[in-house]
Length: 467
Image (spheres, rainbow, N blue to C red):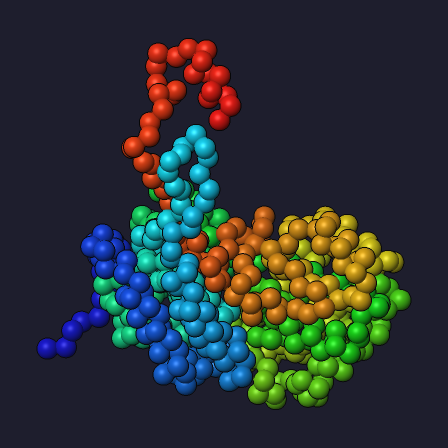
């Protein structure tokens, strides 16, 4: 007899049971041995390597991604992060010795990384494979169980993750829940030991409110309007190439893509012409026919992005096909500062160019807005570089390039203010999913009575000298 599919009510009720099972598995000590963690990481690498074609097909179906882009930003990125974690796991997990004050001698002090327990990872739709499974790497390395919630807006990738995770990873330690708002709402009612969410600010607030009910720590990887400052002393050819690549990768649906460009008024036309030339080199005369140019995730987001072009000066591009979810690479010159285009995170293929009288005005322009997830500066001036670094705040800064800081697992990735809180990648991720337990071990062979009553002036004198 064929099994009947679960009803919505059964799916929701199963979520609590799944979390309880993961908690039982963690309490059993299953995830603590380093050998087990390494095996799970190796299995995750096998998943990415062996199922590469299926993954790329899912990404193509969801976002129209070409194979090279899918490899560099999703599959290959994940494999590189796994290799880094495997090679550093022994070092990260060791006790970290710290000094001990004289008053506590003889003794020693150290920090012991402990797994937190059962963690929740809520992925995003724009890089649905990488942003769902990259946080799982440090969660595994730190010795946790995990419930994984892929984004329902990338249904093909979500279904593939749900199918593959049980085939490659330990089913007692890892589980996947698919679905939309009802399932996510039910998931957030459960008690976790850490939550990592990647997505927008509005849902980030919902996640944080739900976490507060259980006093659960959160890592929020959000977004915002990441500025790109271009000084007239930059290398124009290289600058245009790197901006065009970073902005229109994944059709601008990247949380760290340059959201808008600040440039000196006298240099703006040269920069625009250089970017236009690069777009033609990259995607040809008609990007709609380019196999390297993707599509908007769905029609709802298409309508949102298209609305940003109302009442602004489109200086390049602007062609659209709603049914195909296609929007051409588009440049807007000097949009009104109070327009939706300059108030909301674009998350699409529109690049506003904002001319300034002097490039030094860029600092005040950026500081008048929420702190961004990333900030980019193209210049040959070390003086301007220091001015920007010292007087602005952003999650990450990249000078004379864009997004490339993501390739360095030694750098933390995370936001500040409205662009997020907490960080991961490399050891930063391991520490995020670990409780860094303080430990002091004392000897009993030497025990001075200064701290014990009855107290007197002599004891106070010596405690002041060694305290």
